[in-house]
Image (cartoon, rainbow, N blue to C red; front, side, top):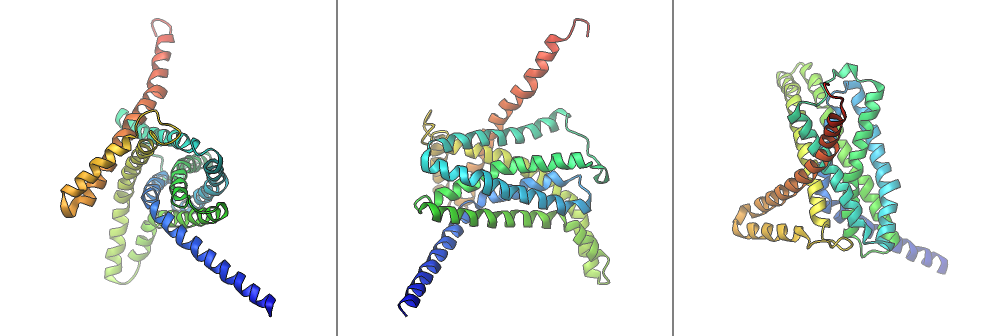
Length: 315
């Protein structure tokens, strides 16, 4: 009976721990919701030239890559760094933020300069191009996932090491399912429209035709949102971490932005929350665009100038 009492006590303790992990994971997931929106907006743009039968397999591969990013690369590194080298986390995040800003600025540069690749018909995407597309999506996901996991880690920093580990595993799995479930629904919406258009009901046919016509526009909008999200998130990472512990080169500029955001919030009444958030987002996007444009200039314009100078006379 004494043994059974001990088992019952241990079971209650384990159940309470599981409840604590679940509650903390919920708080951490909510805290990272902003980056989840960005991740959801960025990913569908990689699938614009993909044949319908390859969409879900590609989403599955990207989702598996995202899980691998979070659990194998980011989670161990974040936990170890937070435990032993907490000052290194802001620097690593700034490197990732710079890369994300570069990705967004490069897309704008390609669009403005006319050097973007021609649209490839969906049926002509080669296996090599598909693998390159998946690798690019997973690489971008690595940066977004890193911020998600670090935001979640900051939310549960007061927890013991093993509780932090369990919470972050739950956050990684839940967020990946949410993001790529939504992505799969977005990219298959036109197929749902075709199915509805074939039904006998007049309402179903109209709804189906409307979905089919709307999806190209929706994907085009999502592509623009994804580019802006890269600049926004990259700039936000740089703003927040530039003056953090471990960098400290200048006072954190995010404090200035946040101070103005609070002032806008207090001065504009019912619209304060929205206008303050828009101001914060605008500042982050501008920082991302400036930093990304500098990197684009270094990587694209300077090598072109060097080739021009090295070209033989008369060429």
